[in-house]
Amino acid sequence: MVNPIKALPGIALAGFLITGGLSSCRDGKRYHEEPETAAAEVSEVPPGGLGAILKFQDELNTEFRDPEQSPLPRNLIQSFAGLAFFEPDTAYQVMARLVRTPEALPFEMPTTTERMSTERKYGNLQFELMGNTYTLEVYQSPELLMEEGFEDYLFLPFTDATNGEETYEGGRYMDLRIPRGDSILLDFNTAYNPYCAYNPKYSCPLVPSVNNLDIPVRAGVKAYRK
Image (cartoon, rainbow, N blue to C red; front, side, top):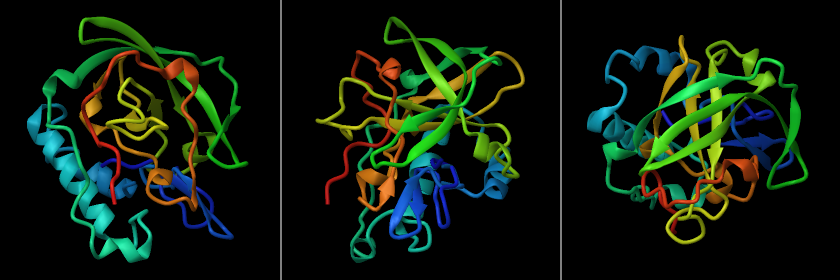
């Protein structure tokens, strides 16, 4: 449930796996889950609410324990006891207005390595959080657009005031799906770390400066401590 882009051979959505040992921070799975799984589970847990948050946490921990999916180095998987999450908080589930930008052209987004990630700005997300109004850019990968099951996948990277202390210094990601209308649920409880936060072999897109939230977002995955 938390994952996102298919990197090069062996990629996983939260990071690209590149031949020669480097992985892309957004493999073709969530940028973490298989498209078939994502579609099948839509009806099991309704969007929003405490149940959806707990389901996200359980699925992410399951992924990290699986040697075939985990971004953790092999020698750390067996001792993995679970990720640290903020307490579930439905105050961080907010509805956003999606303003599409159909004329936007693809661009090269820098990553944690020399590799560039091709993205296109899909639109702006306008929402209120903790009494403030914000706008974040949301992106679509031309590469993932061609992958079955990911035609409606959107990538939302962001930074906030917790980075470098309570959360990963480079910011976090969220996975979204294109809505039928112009409203979309943002659940910051599903914010997760890019794979490079766990393993340097991954190459992860850097969060654009325009996607900074000047408040602490105490929801989702915390910083990883071995």
